[in-house]
Picture 1: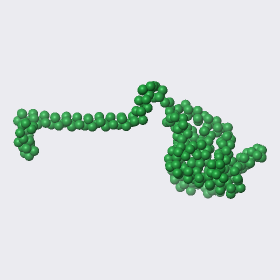
Picture 2: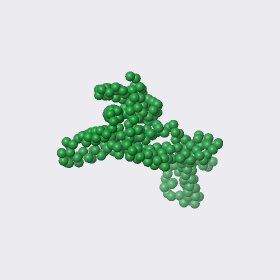
Picture 3: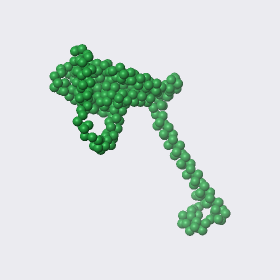
Picture 4: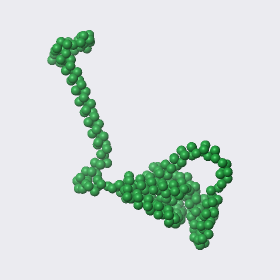
Length: 174
Length: 125
């Protein structure tokens, strides 16, 4: 459970340490506040807490960026040329070089799928992951997201369509 | 391909990704889970109450806040009403004793309401 939650947080915030903190906070809140609730309610409650914790992070990030943008304008312009993806790709390639071909293909496919999931609009991603990864039904997903069941269906349908189109464009047929 | 079928294939890959999380991260997640479990809220009311008490608690506990708020409101209204009656009685007592002692301030005789009150038959007072 905590691994899937970590991945969900990672898709949203794209930072491993922050994703870990978010999952840790969400688990602690669930245990402290809802530890006495029936077991069948816990997945929905946990998802609601997790998504709220992620949204809290976005809010804090927004406030911080309001302060940081004027400050970053004062720093050296050389940093703008640096592409963090370059180092990431080199690191990934060096890791992948040591693993067999089938595993390499699998990990590349997974990386593409995860990247496309990260690109989904947040609400679509939440709905899709809760419905199809966490196995929550439409009513539970709607309760966790605080929206109508109709909205959940729409979010899921759009997310699936977007993913299918994006993967097809990269020549991937699942 | 149907939405569900496609989603389940994606799910398969996502599960592989979750299983492939590096050891250090998995350890940190496991510790976080253990830490959360140590802070788990325990359902004390359900353990301590049994039988009829348990049923009463099940029925009453969800409405406990409302019941307490209503009780507080009723106590407040009763308190205000009692205080008003007490104040009024003290006021009357003061006027009565001033009348009996012939010690009313001169302004009292100038008050139209006071004359009207004096004109009322004593049985009504």
